[in-house]
Image (cartoon, rainbow, N blue to C red):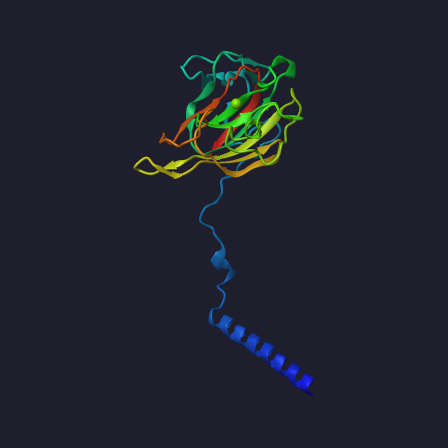
Amino acid sequence: MLKTIGAQTILSVILFGTLSFAQSTTEQPLPPASATEDWSVKPPVVTPATYGLPPSDAIVLYRDKNDLVKWQHPNGEAVKWSATDNELTIVPKTTDIETKEKFGSIQLHIEWKTPNPKEDKSNNRGNSGVFLMGLYELQIYESYNYETRIYYNGQAGSIYKQQIPLVNASSKPQTWQAFDIVFDAPVFNPDKTLKTPAYLTVFHNNVLILNHAEIKGPMVYQGYPKYEFHADKLPLRLQEHNSRVGFRNIWLREL
Ligand code: MG
């Protein structure tokens, strides 16, 4: 008998609870489904990228040697790197190159290839880098079967000397590799102090290696990075570090 009463009591509590819940929800009826339909901005149509070709709304920075005119050395001289067979290859001791056009936040696709490992000294194999806004370095390095040639925040896909990539997705030397990058430029306050740092999301050979990783400041080889106020848009720079790294199929979309 006691068990029966107990069960009835529990049942009534459940029923009461259900009723109370039903009453509270009827006080605020759900809006019609159309209330959460957003028709305000129709996304522009873009023909997507296919192998070797950029999407239809991209700014093409390098497809063949006719695109060399879009680049220069930082001192303003014409590019001395080698441009053949749709490949732009570093010529050592010629200095970095940068785009003549300036950019802020971007989506960037860039393919790169490190040279024959016999060419480079052991600690400089395939060393180059993508400098977003000319300041923030996503490292290029020969990191396949990587062991102890360089610190982990200096291998391919690292934010150089700041952030170790999530995984090592490197392929063999002399094979084409791709970075697909989302770069959020830093934002500064009117008094030139930092409001929001820069962020990097990167896929290396289609594998996520940096997931909205915070950039701590411009690349510095020695010491610690620190933001300093700069313009909203700056050239994209590719590093010449005495290794014959090749590039191809470079394009970006401004964000
Ligand atoms: Mg580098």
